Length: 223
Image (cartoon, rainbow, N blue to C red; front, side):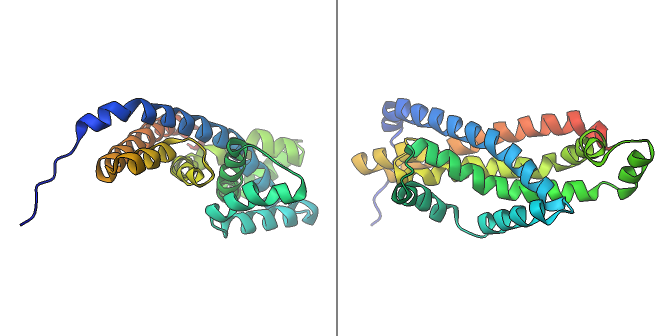
């Protein structure tokens, strides 16, 4: 005979302040990661489309090496490996570094593809009007490329928020770390991770709505 199981909502109410604290850390981590990953991805993406090997080769090596290695491995290498080289950061800073370089490498490929999707004739027309390559890229090509990249960049931002959960392995006190602690103390694994799943869902839905807002605002650029 199978015993009945009841969802212990009273436990969730008691530990909700811990989840809110963990959520705040997740949001801060994600915001910092996004603020670093976006310019990093753009810089590497520009390097990828450069005709000069001095820029193209390092950008390609960075992108391929970061995209094709698990983010968890990078967490361990940064947090446990760098101290062997005399470089030591807090768990929070290590987390931001890993989230930034991992997501930035994917964003770089998005920027590269978006830049190359803009017709080459626009660059030729810009040169004919007296623009240098850099000014044409900055004022003509990039605005269109960024507008086209918004949906794919949005996917990477959502992935970054979800990937922040792996930082629990180095004791960053984000949402998943808080959930693991509560589950170990109470044994209420089902309740804890069901609620945590809905919290991640809610946060990512909010992020998706914000991204869609910016996409609509910038859509006119590609018309």
